[in-house]
Length: 611
Image (cartoon, rainbow, N blue to C red; front, top):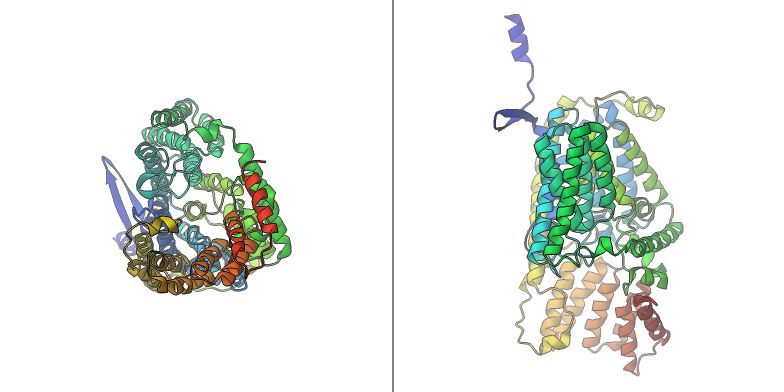
């Protein structure tokens, strides 16, 4: 009787029961949050707006921060986790100081509108790790996360098939763009990110013990199809790695699964060829890796040069373009065949961190990763490592990077006391008991979730309004011949909903410019004022300066327009559009033109053509 009393008096951790067929398992409540975040990162998609894949995932990032950041106090109460917590907190502090000193606070804090890898992104990575950490140490949680990642990969692969089948030549499904290489992106932002997710999932399936053979067959076959359609060359390497691991770990069964994986890849080739796939398959079969490789080498070279100029604390998050644009030469044009040097990132996580947060921030985040990997293990660690390898030659992104950190945290092994001196010193600092922290953590998460939902809805809604405002105006002469009604309402609403990014102000400026072009000349000044706000938020964006110059020129302010064009070209010496406009404006006698720019135009055009 006493024993029964003892058992019933024990605190019971709340769990949710999932049942399917004759089987069932209980998933801890903490794992449900991890599942929500993981599935959101894999499959968040809003079929409206010009940048739909970006804004929906940024909304997920806000929610990740709200659910994960307050857990830092819980993590501090466990001695094993203190060292990585301290290292990441110090990194966030250094990155914040770097952002404040960057003179482009909006971009450094929130990130470029179509990339989003600012300081908030760094905070989301840490939050995702904490969410994974909270549900670690449970086989049921690892199983649930393995399931949801596999489902997310399958869903993305199937959407890649739909994308190729729907509009396989120039556009993607509901606004998703197929890359110039012909690769499909599924529900992600870029074909490279699709290949990254699928490659990590193949490694996950190869190492996990939680998926049944039937489930593994489905996941591997569909991922093989998506890998081909993504046209990501690195994924071929991970297919080979997956085959080796499957053969080593599962012997005869692994041989069958390897065959299924290869058949899936072959099926992807058949699907692409069926839907006019000559363009789809060109990226792998053309051997263009040398061109891409040389482009990365040039980007890395100039990024390192920029790092040398500000090696201690860097140029601030999302500061790579600011740092490198003025340095690029014609070798960049020859390598990329693009008439501009504008790249938002370094295509290498180490170099980008060096440029954006300096040597201090890079060492701190590197130490965090080592300490986090040291206490992690299992299939989720292998998944994180496989996805992380891509970051050595691909950009940081909001679609897959938080998933890496979540898996790294969820894969933490049984907790041991730290053995190194630094860890022991940190663990000697007293902390509040975890039980006492629970009410405060719950309250903080609830409050932050409300803010995250408001902010997430505002960015999605604001992006929809930007899309309604008409997008970017590229040909004023064409617009003049059309009957266009003026309505600045959507653009004005966008500036209220998402004031953090310059895109909403640019959209408003374009609306005024459209109206001014078709007859309402007095609105040119309003277009100029709105674009000046955009330039103030993105002062190192040559495209923003170019649009301001266009509006000034149309308003008759040619001297001011010339200075704006000049600013754009100084920011990006390879900006062919700005250079050509500088040459065209020379017809005005009141402006003394530097004719060297016109020579540069011919040289850049020649480099674009490969000469």
